[in-house]
Length: 247
Image (cartoon, rainbow, N blue to C red; front, side):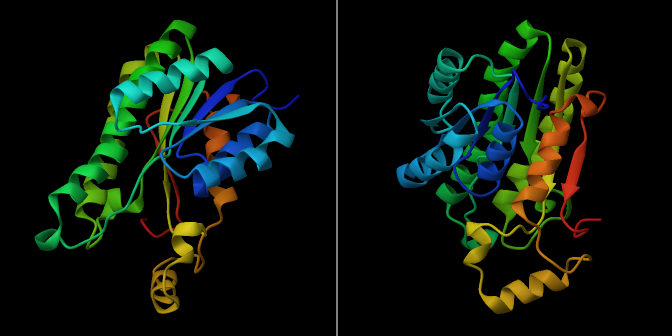
């Protein structure tokens, strides 16, 4: 029997990169999967074409920073798939820049998507999971939340907030049988890192003790473990999948 048989998972930002890898991994293990995305219809269509052979899935266009839109997202998931039993808050954006030059709208948007989006989705999910007396939530953070990174005050603040949010929510939800954990991916080979200049890539790789970038499947494996029954006694933790960059 596949380990997620009978469960429904929602992955935000799930049509590309890490979200896509996690969604496909969950599908292959028997989950019904919903992914949300904010604007790239072409990527959503490509994901659906790839995902359909593995199981039941839907893609829903929704901005997680909009509380009303998130309510609509969860209503669609419940109507089409039931649940969700699993939530992965993967949606996030990067708008890097040194603080003294950073535009206020770039600060606001990064905080709204990564931190407020996590709040919106967790609020909706916990209401479902408390009623079901169980569930799993994974919030994606970053080494920037643990060590900081020049030019990423907005992103570091957002992900640092998500990290603390995760630990507080884990304490709230433990008595209801709901686990809440975080994954901190390092530099992973996705569309985002594909645009990094070769020289910068070499500099980044030199900072990683394992001396390589990670693969999306390695992050998906960590997510699959955290939502499986094998991790039923793990909550409030941050699992770093980063090659040792933040140790």
